[in-house]
Length: 175
Image 1 (cartoon, one colour):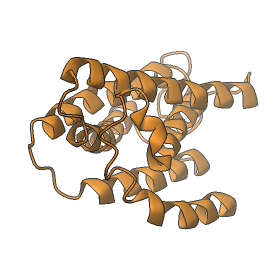
Image 2 (cartoon, helix red, strand yellow):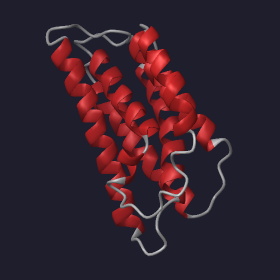
Image 3 (cartoon, helix red, strand yellow):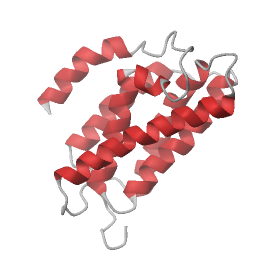
């Protein structure tokens, strides 16, 4: 836990502005250009992997769906306040949710993830190159996010292959 917080202390000041000036990269590559996005996406995958059951699909699915909504808002020029602050908060919150056994319902967890996704998507949408296809660019950052989620899920499942669901109010048999 201390090492995660120490890493965040060094990374977050630089990553707060990781989304500025990144508009020339493709939608798929863009999520890999900011450490803030990488950390948040892998942490989300780790959390989903720890929770197991339906969370394996619901949490990444909620994120990918809402990152599309945020991307649309950003590409459309619709202002969303505190986007960069929310992105930093998403990194911290998701890291804490991985590190601390918090009991949130699956619906609440999906809502939290959806809010964070909206903010990440907005930042990506704002930086879409003017000559890019919105559909292709959006599909690219959605796919890249899902890949990063998959990395986190794989690590969590590999670390504890027979583990039961943790920090979830849904039992493994119903969840």
